[in-house]
Image (tube, rainbow, N blue to C red; front, side, top):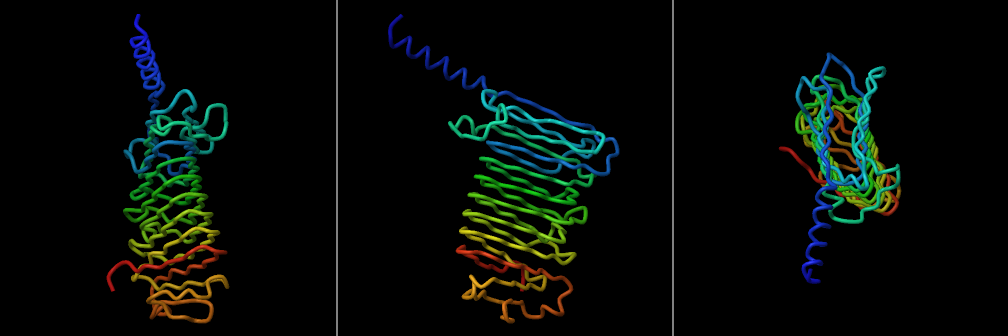
Length: 282
């Protein structure tokens, strides 16, 4: 065989081997009247989509994963009503992205809109889109490493949310529709990434928010429907947001005391940038 043909054959074999290393995996559980579910999502690398699914399925996960470096995770415990889903590094090793092919992993995870859901999400090198509208979120804990992630509350939460805890390392994170989340407390802690916290949506209750940022950039999109107060630490003494009136170390929207719903935000940052934008009708 000619050298050129041998080289072409080897290249074709390598290409086929790469294509064959992506394997599909599906897991789901029928809904049997469960009223609560605690779900942990562990997704190391690739593309992740999360949202509301069929009412008659407690959860479903469809994955295409790189079988050379990762393994699918599916572990349901009926005794305490919990499930762990996602894709983890083979052998429990840390995530190391070595090729674009590795990032072609995809996963779609859906939960029943009938069940109260406590959701814990751990993202590695991920392009994530979590549409939590239509679900019944009671607690949310999300950690984004080197991810580009969007969390959306496109519809009002079907349950009262006790707390949403968000953290990001070197990540780009956008959380939108927080007015729809119905979370009593929201906490965000960031490192060097770029973060947008959008408080749009339907405000049916008040909320307290704590933002801690090291070196990154935070944009706060403030709703006109609620009374807004922002309390700052000494590192942000030059902060002068448009549309807010200064009251000592805090800034308040006009008519804050008379507002039916309040959004109280505490911001702490060492050297990060904090910006504000107004959303909604005046």
